[in-house]
Length: 394
Image 1 (cartoon, rainbow, N blue to C red):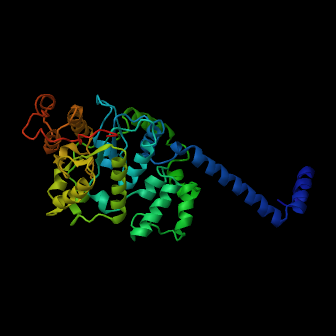
Image 2: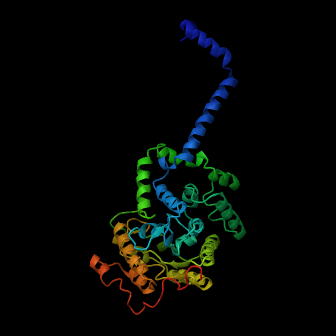
Image 3: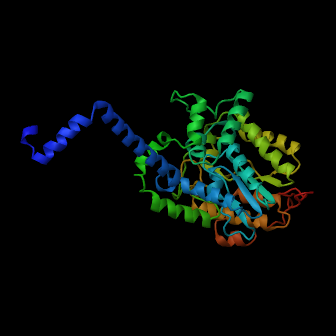
């Protein structure tokens, strides 16, 4: 349509726009609109992560809330996804909280512990549960830990400094392929720059994940931090340990594990390393000497920190039918069985190592076996203690 064909009022507006909207003004107007939209998206990311972030986010958020409220109880569980799925403390008589997370390594354990130790009444005992792979390979620090806000700027700076000092950038520079300087990447993570969340915003449809994520948050809080991964009725997939040839821990993860134990020892808090089982399919593929090397490495920390003990097998295994996915996460049946047994071990005033060893050896086939005799702490090895006899503050 030509200008001459427009109504009189429209021609007046057209003429005004033609005179007033110069290319420079048009670009400024478009730039302002884009900036305003960018700002709105940024505010949405800061204020409403539950609306669009990945389905695992609310389970991490539940742990952050329990920490912020210092709602922890007597026992704190720190570790990786197997512990997050397999240890269900909600029904224990001893109040406990599961702060293990998917892809969790000593870095995440230290972050959670540091926050727990700020509480007026920190936990009296800690269970550490990490599989061998989470000492030897980087995992999901940037994809989960950093994006979900589980660490702050100072903790990212600590990772940077420690990594450079040790000459081990395996975690700090993991999958850093965007071409940005590391300091800029770190700053973008700290301020939750929108580009880091673009994929989640698209997949989450800005707010489509809100109902499910809120329900998951509520369930995770009720479960005292425990949450599931795979829930299939069995898996014979060989998990990561079955592909390991040697146990060679990363220096940066050794540093963080040592720091966890150092802080616990300084506060007089007892710590027990209790491994959650892997599936039989993975255990059959373990390289010769792998279990022994892992146990010997942990023994060096037992010698260094008197309040730290390794309890039971460091690579226990259970039937494939009790696992829900290819990462050897216990399914609901397996987790319920393991947690019931662990509860009985921890209920004793001085829990017995023999109890944990029998728990790890094989699951009971019936509820009656679990209830009568299978977890009996009167076997010949019952004199061994899960927890050191020294109490907090002694």
